[in-house]
Image 1 (cartoon, rainbow, N blue to C red):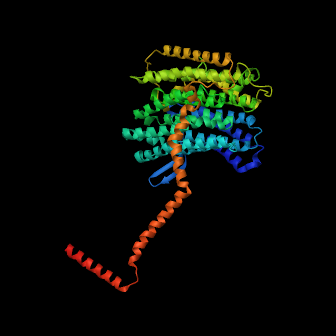
Image 2: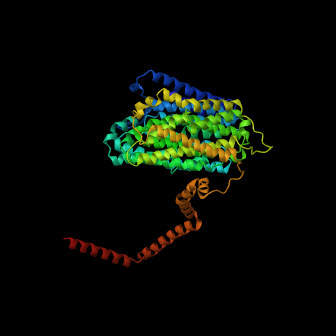
Image 3: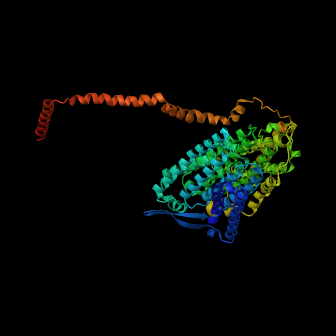
Length: 618
């Protein structure tokens, strides 16, 4: 199993160290090594299928990593249904994106470096999900952060792109701080940082410690998975090449936070307050992303808002505990396929429209790009939850689980998931109709055309997943497959009948599509966005998240930095210190006048003082 990590890591090493000498064959080599990692993972899946559920977990100790007295941590891998599911998702979707990139980046002079970063990302993500300890997970966690930074800022000669990479890096550092402190707290509390060790001793910790651990891990998840309040980097991250958006910011890296929460289920099961916090963050984020997605005219930023919202669904499900862990991973897998397909479709549209991203300048592209239109359409039907498509099988389970429970929670969380499903149908239909239907809004200088086969073939494969993956996973018992890790999903009746929930979801979906068709498919779409309401203007500014960050954090920090960097302030401080020392010296040097009688008198007074002190003590 170590080959799954070693193969793409070898590709990254060879392409980066080999330099320009690998330009001719480097991209193809990186793609082959990524597919080889998938083959190893797929072979492991077949081996697992022949085992009983209780045997589907293997700990592989590679070597002694950190021997320190009584503490000895191995570099080891944990292969179980959860980690193996991620391995197959990362390697299969990642390899398809490698193939797509062969066409998309064909004319980029630095494509060899781009493929090296792709291989590096795949290796780091696989390290994250296969780690047998939180410390090794942290190594992969930082690795995907580095790869994300390098890929977002790949075209760093463009200052806004470089700024976007910096923003993603800094926002993720905040979350990484939470993960680092959590690992330290685990070591101080349990004496170990392995998953097995933490699970074994978790019952001995106090509720306060477990709550603190849960909240720190949630902070980490918010940074990596772009959840509130650390979500503002995701839209800017669309500055990177479109395959980056598909691989990192749709299918894999942004799901790392969901993986962390589900993997840490033994902690959250004993920390109900932290578990509730996960649910609340998920509910806020899925609503936030849906509102922002309704007004974005940049096709990639609209999809980014959609990703934020869909990850919110997964986080909410993970916060529901054993009722929702498996459903969160189920939706994560199906979402990885249809969202990657949607991003690749957006890249195909950009390829045909001279890299433009403004949907108001598209329209009626279905006639010019039939394969892109068809594959994108299947992804659209999957994400809005059209019956029998992949998203219908997975997202509806989350909505039904949200209505399970007592008191206020099922009504609040259930209604949020239900209403946002309708909003999702609206903004994704808006995106689809503005791009592929309605009146053509491009001029005679544009020549829309279909993308080459290296780009359309991966889109077709992902579209097949959008169509049938959800049904396949449902009928083969995917949630039961995860049971050794997530626990068996106990059947609980929602506060309203399941059939009623399904009918309401369908009605809201149809309503969202209908409204979007009337406004953006049937009616003319203006080339310039109208002024809009107060909420519309706020949503265009990402509900003022950047403004809040600037006012609360960036502004005061920059003011302090500028004050410290000011020449006058520094000079005054240094000169003031010097003048203070000189003043004290002026007083003290009065005693050093060079007169022997003064020194003798001082010595006599000292002796008298000593005798007086001795006499007082006696």
